[in-house]
Amino acid sequence: MSRLAERAGGTPFYAYDRALIAARVAEVRAILPPALRLHYALKANPMPALLGFMASLVDGFDIASAGELKLALDAGMAPANIGFAGPGKREAELRQAVAAGVLVNAESERDIRLLAAAGQALGCPARFAIRVNPDFDLKSSGMRMGGGAKPFGIDEEKVGTLLRQANQPGLNFEGLHFYTGSQSLSGVALAQALRAAWALACRLAPLAAVPPKSINLGGGFGIPYFPGEARLDTTPVATALAEIAADARTRFGSIDLILELGRYLVGEAGIYVTRIVDRKQSRGHVFLVTDGGLNHHLAASGNFGQVLRKNYPLAIGNRMGAPAAAAPVSIVGPLCTPLDLLGDNVLLPDAEPGDLVVVFQSGAYGASASPQAFLGHPAVTEILV
Image 1 (spheres, one colour):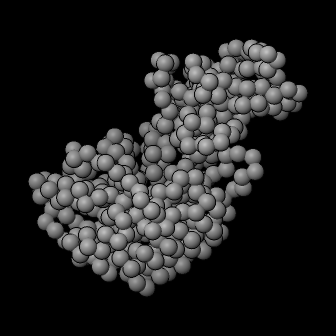
Image 2 (cartoon, helix red, strand yellow):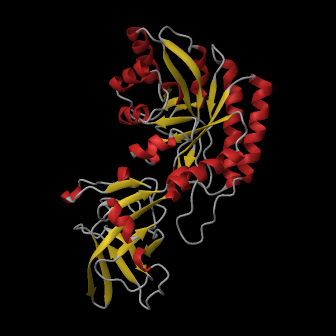
Image 3 (cartoon, helix red, strand yellow):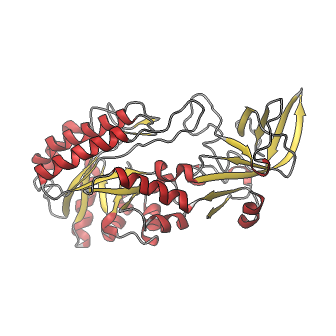
């Protein structure tokens, strides 16, 4: 670990492992029917070098902003294989997307109006799909993004009317998009959501003015972060996808089915490393103060979606294999807030200033999801190894 820190040029840093990413993509490919296309969601980790590597492994990218559009194109992904989702797209972003030739997942009637206007003004019909907000969600998920009142997508009861009007000047309707939740460790729940999305797609597709070319079934595969969490069993998912692919051949002949994954592809392939700069005691409790914290890794501090804070897996990187000390310690960052906590009452080997703290499961929602400008500390380094 000390050598890796030297390679990074110092701490704090993130390191992402090419071999682990490639192995996870291969693992997913093994459960996918040939008809399914695998997309990577940039929001999980948009590091440019990682995107360049990922572009050679997957069939497409899913983006959520004009900034991510630039990153996707710079990484070499073909515009035809990029999908643009997310609420509140600015008019300028929509025009950029139309000019680039990417598929825009419309989240509202406003999106469709602006896309039609952009397509006519630019002389190239806007490629678009309708993101559906169904009346169901992904059970057993960290975040539920479908069902009920949501800012994401168009309510399923309104979609039929829009599909009948999809063949308008300036528009090129291509399909439907679903994303009902994320971070699920239940293969049964994921399979249930995939089947429900497919059933709804089959009910909606005949209403379209033109046949759909693609159905994005979403994703939501989770990774274990905390003690007691079991790894995702993908067997039920594989069964559901095989059924869907077979049904698609019967119903539609040739149609692109898309599975959209982010965290599951990169989350376990990354670590965050920060150096201990001080060891101090306060009323009998030891605090290890590090040179990085929530400003670089908001998720590990518990301030990125955790209701009850839990520790990410931790280690003293240059003391791997050493026995744990008798008393627990807390690992805190350099920020002037009690929220800057990377490890709360954890049992680790005895550690001193200069030792390296490693936070595992850090390949997704790390650097780009953290307030790096907070309090003016240096930005974190990211490397692909």
